[in-house]
Length: 317
Image 1 (tube, helix red, strand yellow):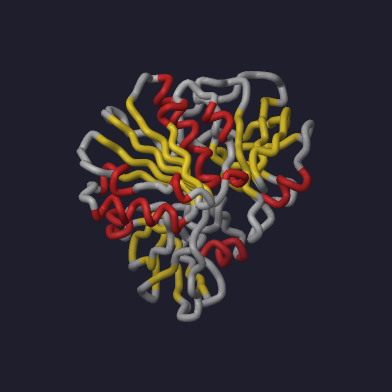
Image 2 (tube, rainbow, N blue to C red):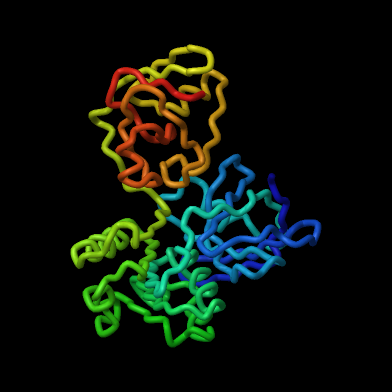
């Protein structure tokens, strides 16, 4: 179900980062959400983009999102920054959570890089509300690029927040100290640029953290080398139709050309919206949504970006 909302406030939170406060157009309470959730924002140019909710999960009168103006924007963040003003009307999805807090964790370690603070901030609000034990590490290139810093400093959990800025070497993150003594009931959450996330996750694994204690959410996928891409075919189990997927097209694009709609959102294999069952064949996974174990089962894939290792994939469509 889609929700009509109005932009009721807009604020510059940091260099190239704006927050947008959204309220239901009919003034009704918004659907409840849990920390780590995101919404799909449907833009006037036809694009849909995901943005994490960064307000307190107990709030029902508003949703708050933070948007980084990405110089490599594909039309999402630039459109919001340039065109979305107070009073504008939007359509959004109900919240979905692919990055939830683990139930029963004794302690939580939160790591945010840049705009990755948005879901992490909501997590901190929830953990503090529950009286849970946690520590938040927020890393940014500079203080002027760090969003919601005043909110963090004025929060009831300010003593649990550590700020780390590249321009201030004395604040450098001591990752080995932060991740010392991994335990099964201590969970790590990380969100931010890909390099930052990989550094945190690689460090954790090197220090003996178990995979089930590591949680991540990607905002964008790393560039993929398409020079060796080849063609393959997909067959729809329902109709038996077979379509060729050339090297320069995705499965979703080919199916859409044939009038077959597959729900998509991020188009980068991050959100899982287009996840499709594979009945035969072996996918070449290029997503960041499925875990390594889920990818190894080869029974589902993301047709927006993933391809095939075998000449044919049979899809449950």
